Amino acid sequence: MSTRVLTQHVLTGEWLTHALPLRDLAYGPELNGPGALTGTLAPKLAAQNLAAIDPGNTFIYVETDGEIVWGGLIWDARPKADTLRLEAASWSSYLQHRHDLHGKLAGRGPYTYADRCTVIRDVWAYAQSVADGDLGVVVDSTTSTSTVGTPADPYTFNVWETPNLGDRLDDLVSGDATPDYTCTAAWNPAKTAVTKTLRLGWPRLGARRTDISFASGVNLVEDPEIVLAADEYAQVVVASGAGDGSAKRRQTSAVRNGRLRMEHVLDLPDVRANDVLASRAAAERTARQRLGAVEEVVVRDTPAAPIGSWQVGDDIYTRVYNPWTTYTGWCRVTGWTVRPDAPGGPQATVQLKPADLYQYGGS
Image (cartoon, rainbow, N blue to C red; front, side, top):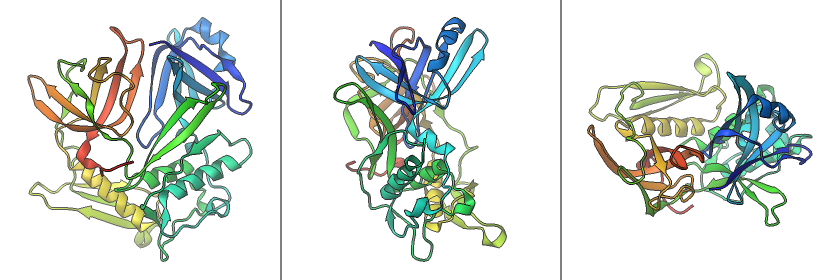
């Protein structure tokens, strides 16, 4: 696995370095999030490469065996002991630094029974229409039957609230039966520029994979932790939205299941739409009604599941055997971090969620 790191000026497109000498490199994508990259530079190398790591103004890419496998923006660079540590995140992280300053996404809203995928594209179109705000991100053309807004309660962006665009993207993908997204990067056919994409999935990203698996004694580097904790358990979730006092919007999702009642309040102060609140409450309750899950595995590069063979959203059959427990079941990949220079060869730390929390079908 041959890996190099490249950096590029965000606005001019000038290539700043084609081989940034990062050590302890770790990178990867995320389901419904930007994913992250971290790495370190020795002080001497940091001084030589300061112009190539300007936080908030520099694209950073990872190329493996000639193909771009990750891209994002450098957000943080700081010395720690005898190294300088870099942190970066992919395209959707930029929206956390942008707000609707015109209202209604400059006339694109408000929305009634609107496809959430359409609203996501409008958010990005608005963000990139403002001077010095264009990353060159393309949102794919996926459509869905998941809608937002009603005639009585349109989904809108009020200028006096200066809504954060990143928070709104999270709202649009965080409920039950809502679209998925992930951030991707790839060389264009001529390998002269990088294509930056927000890839949407409906009803979900990924597929159930029968050709690869994660298993103790095969490709798991260490015994993963099986989480059995009631601190985060709840079968009653109240989503609290915008408004004050008696005007504050609330939606509750609750079931009785023969267990001691546990409650959780999900605070979403920027959400005004009742249907979005109800969807978020239901999704949160489903996730919190789970005890005994494999949340993370460390996988080495083997034919059972070569690094790079799975995608965000895929279901992987997972088998864990250790002195404490036996766990077998389908787990959904929600993100991973690759360490190409890990001792003993490349490794990936894969984040998982129980697959039955999600809706299945083609994407």
